[in-house]
Amino acid sequence: MVDTIERLDKTAHYLKSKIDFVPEIAIVLGSGLGKLADFIEGSIEIPYEEIPDFPRTTVVGHEGKLIFGTLKNRKVVAMKGRFHYYEGNDMDAVVYPMRVFKRLGIESIIVTNAAGGVNTEFIPGHLMLITDHLSFFCENPLRGENIDELGSRFPDMSVVYDRDLRKIAMESARKLGIDLKEGIYSYCKGPSYESPAEIRALRLMGADAVGMSTVPEAIAARHMGMRVLGISCITNMAAGVLDQPLNHEEVMETGKKVEQKFSALVSSIVENWK
Ligand code: HPA
Image 1 (cartoon, protein in one colour):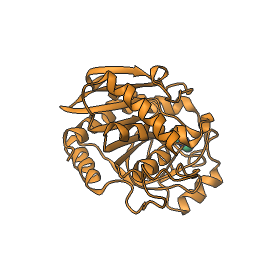
Image 2 (cartoon, protein in one colour):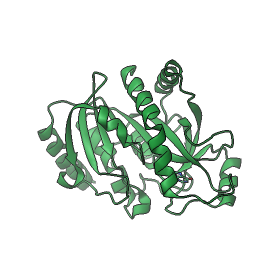
Image 3 (cartoon, protein in one colour):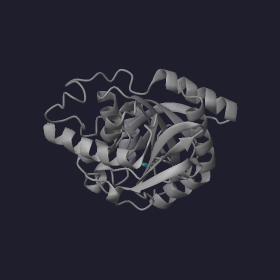
Image 4 (cartoon, protein in one colour):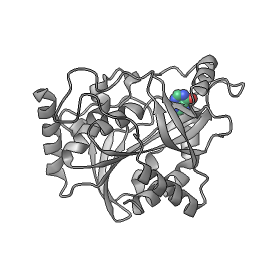
């Protein structure tokens, strides 16, 4: 798969021409969680459409740019707007940015998302540290000829979400007085929300939250040996938990309400990163 490597290097080469540092951490910002980008200092913003071979975003609430700069004295790059499978992207496009990050020399990612609460003890506005995921309903981003230069054919997924980073996240939350929940994130393809029966089934399988992102990126990152931390913002209760319909506006509104707390938590994690 020389082609993919060539494309990745072309993209990485372009980005390197725009920045004079290698970020330590890449942060993927979920729906309604873009506010964190405002805290990045000395930022260099690069719209996706200017980046050679980079995919394009189509979702309302996802702007579509990379923001390179400094957060709490650490060099980071934030992705404002990610690529979802439900938009019609193939999995190569969904995980393309992770691969570019790795080619840039970045070794860690923080993936964030808006998610529905499957665990009935959660309420909208809770933040959940992802301890593991269910990928059963996700087309595997590694399907197809393996790109040996990126990673092995059958990568281990025993610990996708780095234990040490999770400890740092819990400790950061404790210091900030944030009640950070922990749980299992289940991927569903979307774009329609799940049915109540699907949510009951997911709960039986051990899911605490459900969403339409994160898992492909996490798998691709682990394939390349990157460290991964995942945080969900519970924006709504999943289908059937409450007797009310779900809508995207609710997701975006809750995102807005928690953006302060969310930004404080992620900033603190970055500050305490080891
Ligand atoms: N289901 C799937 N994805 C989501 C949800 C949900 O309830 N809320 C936010 N993203």
